[in-house]
Length: 222
Image 1 (tube, helix red, strand yellow):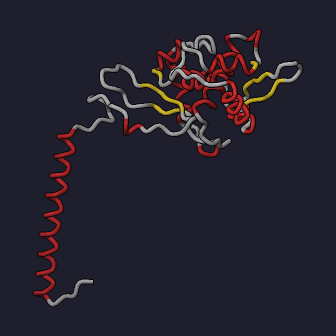
Image 2 (cartoon, rainbow, N blue to C red; image 1 turned 135 degrees about the vertical axis):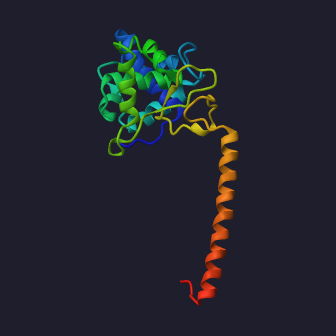
Image 3 (tube, rainbow, N blue to C red; image 1 turned 180 degrees about the vertical axis):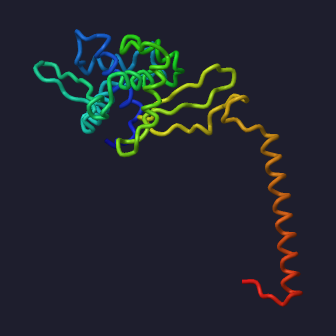
């Protein structure tokens, strides 16, 4: 389904619910207090935030309206569980990758494999890449891409991946390694501009020649 972009806190709350379903199954679904603690966790979070319980409640209510979060029954304390896999029509492997990206920020394939260990154990790096490629190539009729591969940063050996649940990423604003396929040196840009100028001048000269020939032959240009 086509979802609106989530806010940072909505994405964080959803990611926490996905994570805690695997890491603390005995206390899952989560109470609002536990969910707030998970959102404000200082480790394995990027960025680190400090949300009030009322703000987390608003985020949860918004996620409930999108059917991404469900309210669990059978408890005196209201508890919440995620419904991301069903709503987004994704396998558990993809849900684990999304949750990790939402909670930890952009990650390389090798970082994702390690960080996802408790949510899903991937056999190898190619398996991680395969699910990321599927998320990036998700067709528009299914809601469009959910992750994007970022240009390799200067000094980095691998490209990082980012999620798109909270909206598009401005890739053009990111620093790019000079040997990256996405990098165009300033000298090459200057050369292209000079070539373009020369072609424009040549085209103007040809137009003048055509106009003179037409005048000599008495031909009217259409």
